[in-house]
Image 1 (cartoon, helix red, strand yellow):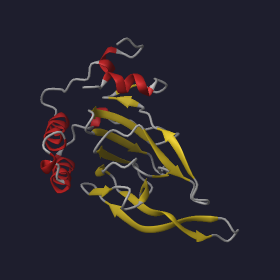
Image 2: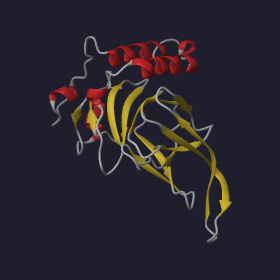
Image 3: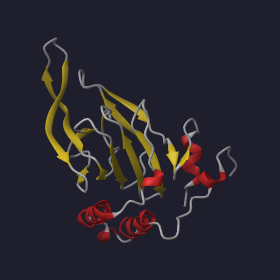
Image 4: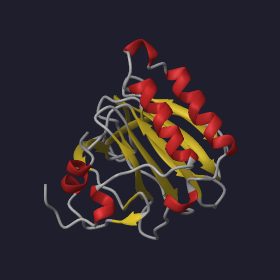
Length: 216
């Protein structure tokens, strides 16, 4: 394979002594082993333990003024692990997870999750239908959330006017998902990309080149 990517993007390697990379190994044992081992509770506990006491994620997170950042940490055909950096006032669109399971651990700050239901529409004042909002739940540092498409759509945003950092695990990599207009409920399929790969900037790089580099 040839590409214009920097070598460190094309040769993903774990760093010896990095507890974040130790986490990727442990997650691989759960998510790449026998299906009976892929327990959601066990995955959540691994993430909870890491969020409670580790700071090895700090060299890999970035923040942007225009949008929350997506920083790839590890990717296989069975799972994908990303760090998201949130500035105050930023939020994700309302979105689904392409049929995959998703766990979110809050590493710094406090994040708010807002649920929405697809197809459960409430009349708006102007006669346009919008998605019906469900529960709103706050997750402090160390908190772990879980969602899949049968539960709800959701959006994520930091609370209290402060930046936040979260660790997101998808049970299979998500290369595209649907985002929803909050006023009309209309869905749009969007491709997702990364801003950094293991701390190296890659904005503007073809996401397919990065994905190809991580095929195992």
